[in-house]
Image 1 (cartoon, rainbow, N blue to C red):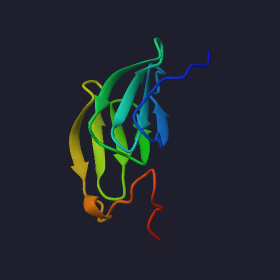
Image 2: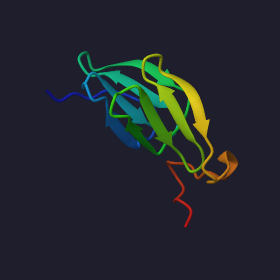
Image 3: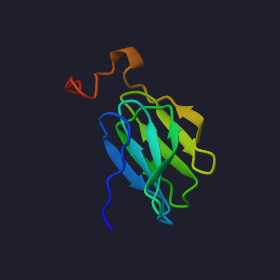
Image 4: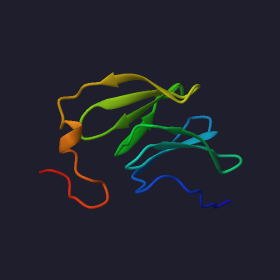
Length: 103
């Protein structure tokens, strides 16, 4: 089945939990969590991202930006940690909709 589910502005990456029940979509504004059975957004996590990966056991989603990586607990869909990577500070991030990535 193919479906269209509205998420925040500028979707950039998608990851699916190993059991196939949840889809995590990063945008320039937040991370949308989609229930794969009903094709509805069931949670919105207030971190923007450029990429997302789910751990093999499905308990964590790692959301990458130009700077820190946010760790989301997939049971509660809350940010449980932030990993500093030495990337750009948030005020240096380009807009995902209008500016190219830094070189």
